[in-house]
Length: 166
Image 1 (cartoon, rainbow, N blue to C red):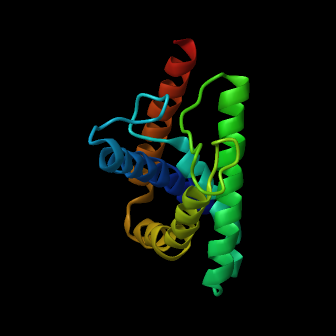
Image 2 (image 1 turned 90 degrees about the vertical axis):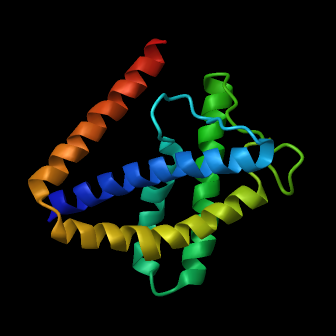
């Protein structure tokens, strides 16, 4: 049972990391009419979104109350974004996003609109994405799923290592 949960959470992490990548590509295109990614990794993933999804899963016990899910997702993912942005900016001297000038921004690292969107994302994770993963888990061959998950983990880890070495 524990292995099953870890596999589902791993799948959730990668799906949300990849969805986050495409969400940002589309958002950037709408804003600038150019296609580019803010990420520092080479692959089509932004792990901050996967991390946010895992944090949101802590709220699954409140599934019967979408208002709590939204508000807690708003706060928790805003915190994840602020902490990640602070580590990147002050630790690595990299600024991947800047909300300066936006409503209720804190150091340009988080703002009301981004937290609001992530609150909506929390609803999407709890009510759509994770239940879909649970259904797919029941019908997909577990050995094949593990092989795919290990393969993606290898590619993701290799991407992180290559980025660090560069």
